[in-house]
Length: 409
Ligand SMILES: [Zn+2]
Image (cartoon, rainbow, N blue to C red; front, side, top):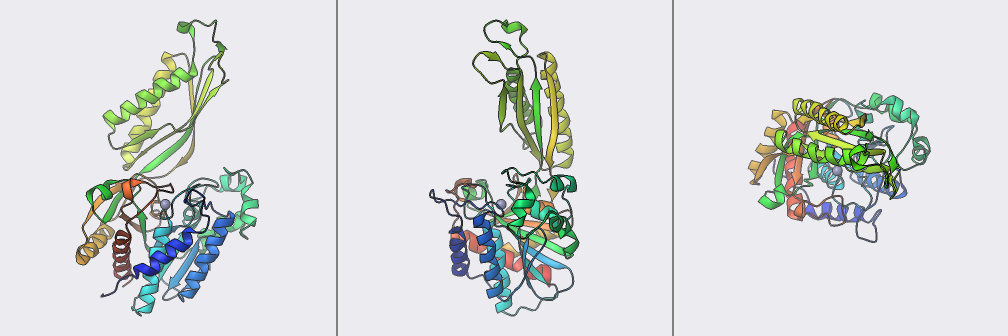
């Protein structure tokens, strides 16, 4: 179909959305259900209604704009509006607003389709409240009900109080899955958040796999003692255990699981003073891989490494799971659709995996998903320096447009 997105309109939308929650450093801070996010939600609602699409919000605060019939399996495209603290203006927003522009164009050009289309903005993809993907997990029925009912949040106030500000409740979140339509496919355009496409000057990345990950809180526990009296060779120093493990785990992954990742991002050493041998070291531990089998093997190898370090240093190793996502392989028909449409438009493309998680990964539990990556300059994301080339966004959005028409035909 001879049709293309209106880049100026899409650009204006991205610029005006980026003013909501703008920080002095030029970034965007828009955690879910904060003041800026609520304003962004109203802004999107207005845009959806202006475009003549049918607006709807579900019990988890996920926002939808529909074009076409009200029944039948729906072809969806979107991403998220929330950001990390002092994040950029493209992560999430580019996917939602590109999808909005596609639907607007299809409606204006009166393209006849047999399946309905929806633009979607999922709630709290960045996990500022209770963990990543609150909205898409609610939509697909993958929330841990016990955790949600407990209602603890990372930012302090209980979940129910935060939800009250958006006229939502714990029960409405848990009920979102019951309201969800059947989904034919979900396509998400997103900045790459790495520098492959930018370095290679390729405008279209076709995501073939999305990495799954484990988040754990772990501890090495030894024995606290006086730094001036306990001989070095008799110490059960928990920090040294952690340091030893951090190096060995990284070498292990680099040597035997190349392409997988392992990261210790937060450490708390106790009792935490100049004059005490550390008796305990608590740390965040995450590892990820694009293959289910590798992720399982990786888990086994890392834990046996941790046990080895613990036993050789007189420590005890303990760990508990905090969150977990499954690796996803994108179905062939979606890969092919994105490739064909890129080729027809004359845009170069190639397949690549996604290290970061995305709503598409969560949607994969209920439907066929696909992701179109566009380059971000120097691979920078989650930062005020996050930047794209507008012509790449135009190309990505045009591929999305053609893929949506194809899937909804
Ligand atoms: Zn994102």
